[in-house]
Image (cartoon, helix red, strand yellow):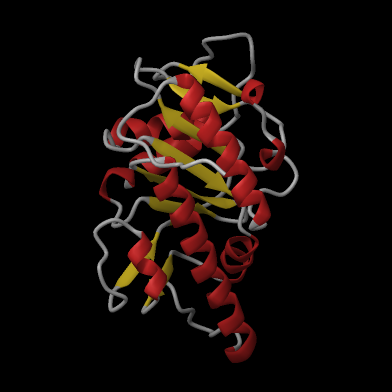
Length: 217
């Protein structure tokens, strides 16, 4: 197992290695079913490393990662993930973000199918996985957006609020969530934390039932 920590943008080989390792870790946690998800890292030459389209993230190899420019255009003869535009949007708004993970959490899909609006996470120790959160005694709103295969349309919807999010994460309804951070280590930790909290919310609903007015607004 390799370290996923890094200091700033990295070279392509390091990025590809970290992306492949993240895929194996997240697959083991059940967050990379089939060919779902997409991962990326900021490179030290101004480009970005991103997973190619259609490959299982738990079984990635170096050749399953490619380079794209700041607009998400391929810099080699491979097809980047269909959601690359959403990655470049995050990098544009968050210059300190050096890695992004988009995973498919079963608990996240269940919650967004049951409830409307954003997801409110409160009182969880795992909230401290988010940068700047130092206590469990807070409420964090995980912004939710409707799913669509039209990436430009989805990016336009996100553009309205992405620069002002309380934490580096959002969730796409019936789909999965995005997190971003200073390096791949931070992103994997956030993925595990968010999935843990979403799973806890599902378990709570199993006991209490879905409230008529909802827990999230």
